[in-house]
Length: 411
Image (tube, rainbow, N blue to C red; front, top):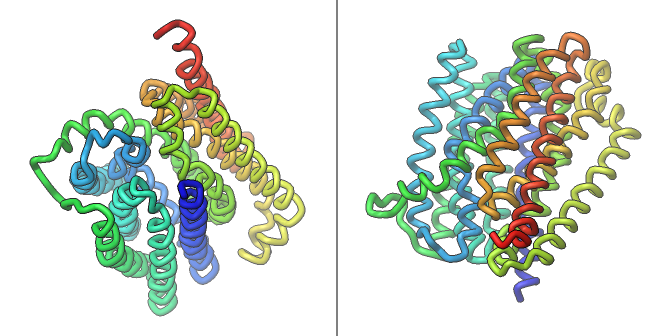
């Protein structure tokens, strides 16, 4: 029964997230084609900044939550913390946007996309409750409904008004409507909880997971910093072109995360039982699966990349088609790094996470800034690749040391 549920959860989670990502990707395609690459650049800024600050809303607790097999903290505790972190994330996001000089339309788009992101973030903690009850399929169904609904709301509004901000407003409202009507209602039937409770140990949970919040912020920054450097160096239009190519590549490569998300509780069980052999076996299988997906996608991109980009964006994009393969390599390198981050959350190796992400960001900043004059737009990819590889190497060493080194030393 457990294996059947795992297969069902994997299929629903993968299908739902894939549909959701396709819908989000179609929004970027629609903006680039019906609007302009300047509009696409503005959307990319809103997406990148909000993605960085949504890490504060997430607070890194999802993998911590589903690997909390001893139920040290209650469902209400996790939900209460998420409400506080969502509020903090919005305030800090807008403060950062003001300090960095964004005004008028840019500032409004950042606010509205952050509002949309927060509906995702609140749903995430509910999906964690569902996953602990062996019902990750609920998350897949939720993302299917939201993806289609938000896409329809955005496209209809943008087509009628040509206003990016108005379209983002309706998309955010539809997303929150589905979160309230579907996610909260369905998950409450599985395992009752309160939306807010001052009596819960949410502050203790926040203290314990603060390193995860910092790690998640740094991890997202690894993908955001190169884009911000590119925008400052080359402007919104070049960023819009880069982001337009990046979006479908990210959509394809994101399938990697669906390969390991359902296995987080099983990694936790193996680690709790000190079964290093089973832990390592799962790790190797998932890593091989990610590598196989990467190989297939890179071959397909080499033969069909120009054709696909021309169909999606027209002739103008072909001048930048050389970016596609490096973008895919960067995304898959980061997929391996992110998988190792998830494994180290299970191992509760917060020091390793912070060291790996910090080292990656430092190398990325140096490479992107120094190479962008010589290598052009591709410096963005080179920095991303190096940062991911350095971070992955550090975490792989930490994982092996925790699983085998400690045991040999009797720690």
